[in-house]
Image 1 (spheres, rainbow, N blue to C red):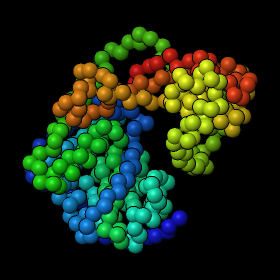
Image 2: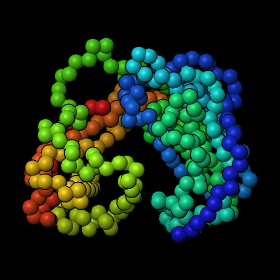
Image 3: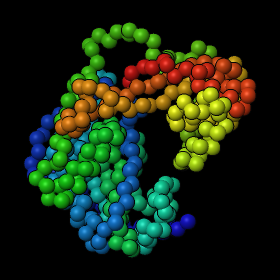
Image 4: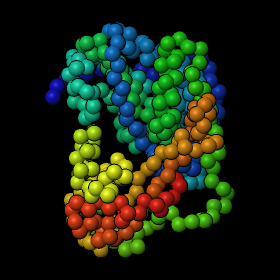
Length: 345
């Protein structure tokens, strides 16, 4: 695997190309979750001509920030509970130019993570969980020897989910090509997701309930410091899915979805690796972003430009491992894994 060092220039600040309103922007209760207070990382690779990448990106970024001006502001905490608001100060975002003596081909074919020397393609943002009073986006444009380039980004997850991020990136491209405005104009209506002033619980939400046994002292996942954990990518292509499906009883193989296969395999591997007792109560949860399935929240037109977090489902099931882990290693029975308990996030 290739090794290289990126030679970075000094950090620059890119502000909106024109004056933008100074105002305070509301963030919904969903946006204000503490679990979202971090910077998400994205790296995009491009083929291009030498010398045009950084200027191209900076020009488009400055113009796009006119329309996406809250991203050029700063997050502030307000009393009494420390919820966040966006102060639209037009201070801008951070961008760094860099050069690396490497070609796109050396990253592998096809181009898939984990990328070699990935930290060289991203600028330093400090503590990724510190999101207050600092730029809400950091960009590094890295030029390669072949003429291609990458754009490594850190974007504050409190501000945008995946849909919002990619609408912003599309807007940068639109403006860099000389368009008068983004193809999809942003619409901010986060107040639509405001909780009622006197919330009332109308159903059981398993994803937010404490487990019945409540004892985490013997749970290796709960007691291991995050610094001692290792992040690893696992790729499941057609060949891998076919191999998993071949180990499932024929009666289930044809009607099991890819998600169900991967969820069951991951569940079993994790359970075995962590050594849970058969009577241990455990929880299976996953985030499901169903932006396009909701109407009127996400119709396929200009409303898709809403810059708010799309409602997610957190399907969840809780059961004893003796119920969920099959005695026969080949018996991957989705009937015994109840995916039916859902709660809205």
